[in-house]
Image (cartoon, rainbow, N blue to C red):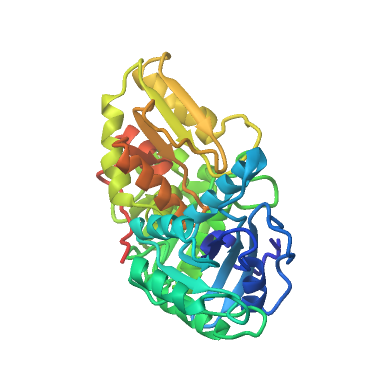
Length: 402
């Protein structure tokens, strides 16, 4: 993935995943889809090992990511690892393309139905239209089992590749890219004050991603944006002729900002904004109620998106555990996972606390929420949990997701 600062972050792009058996032509199809040699193509089954993520611009959607995955029929111990990475890619997929390659469609149907159960749009595709045997019989079988007429394509000749692009655009979630991070909280001409502690998590010369994305969101709305560190908050407030319409703070200083903010100013945090933008804010707010039922014998899972070495005063690894133990006792157990290391079985936990998830796309965050809901494990996020612990959750302002 490119590190070009002018590019849309991967987490904000529509993810289109290609899934199928080994040697079904997924990589060739992606190369035809992009018009580039994105993926290595070979007649040897299992050429694609780890998922390949290719950012591109798609007319009608804009910024998107194409995912080329290993065959879900891979075998052996290494094959199991590859299939697990394919499953992880599936959790990030906004639109799935299932490539059918022969009359044995049991595995394809399993994946097709799995996507459908999670309300992920699926496109059934028969690739290699120029050479495949029993094409008509395969079409009828797929249509019978999926109630969907498959699209017959050829990566080699380009047959129906344009139609595949058009279908992916049509099936993309209707609200994708249409929701503002600060939806419903501010608009053209409103003054917005951002309180941004520059601690160890934001190294010298850098802002953390939620801050950058929120500033861009506010500038797009033509808001009047002022940024300040916590120690200069009062001076900043004194400089306003009228109190700012909205104050957005780092969740770590929620209570500090709440205690001195003008009563006319609305207050929220970056993490709360991303709870709505990337997750399910009402569910997180409901999940925060479980905090009151914790005890010294409870076990909490803290799920970070970033993978980094532990740092002094890290919010997920240090501050949140300390806040919980101060409230409920030092015996309270806290496990921390980073990146995509998220347990399949959440039953050992009394509560899951997810970070703001700026590094993940919304589909993947919702897959985590889906797992927690299915297992009836309460889940919240950093900002919502801290606001609840500070006793101000019912007083802060939250964005609306259309």
